[in-house]
Length: 353
Image (cartoon, rainbow, N blue to C red; front, side, top):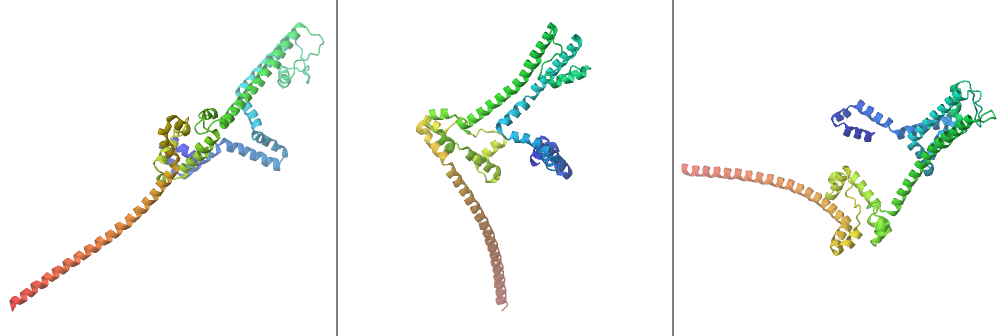
């Protein structure tokens, strides 16, 4: 809900003030949650589970779809069908039109019905009844005539029906699904091969690294260990901006802009050091000592805080000392005035005598 509200706030900056209204915020959040397709899918499975437990066990058959999706190979089969659903549906629609054309042609030419291998439709009296029989059995069986005589018209009709409906249309539909499954399987194999034979961080392949005399396993477990990058990004996510140093703030800004330029894509410190010779050693040392440098900066930040606190206490003490000195100067001034008045009084007494 919070993610959906944040996205709505970014898309509608001028209306963001409406989120201060409790009922509007609740309505928008509820709409965002209910629009989640994964939530709808899980809700449907929950309803089927409830009905299967309390009403009829057969409702649990729907949950087997979710079971198939959790098996990788079956999930690819389901995806191969759903991803090409438009093409499959279009081919089925074309097949139905062709069957309708064959039914209409048989009514006009022969005037007598025919059956199928597993259903007798010879008694169909209307076009709609014969058409429904075709839709039900026409994709798996060719026409079966009850008359033993097979003339040229019936032969041509059977030949075209077998060629267009049984062979071509069925093969096209199955071919679309098979090709889609093959493409998905190839993409999955490419992903698995890329994950096992190339570095996740720099995208350099195992062959490129080994040609440069860099051990692939040591490279992905030490130099470019992907979980170290993941921990660093998580650290940037959960740490307050005021606690980050300069490089960390810069990387966090790039991440917020969806800019991954800070990743060493196509670069490796071992390859660059071997290419540039001793001039690159200083950079290699600096990269390896980044953790120590980070600890030093953290320590300096902590010491800076202590210095600021001590500076504040010094300022308080100086203020108190300044007030004490001011009070002492006032008292001294009053004492000098009193002494001067006493001296004048003494002089007046002497003159009077």
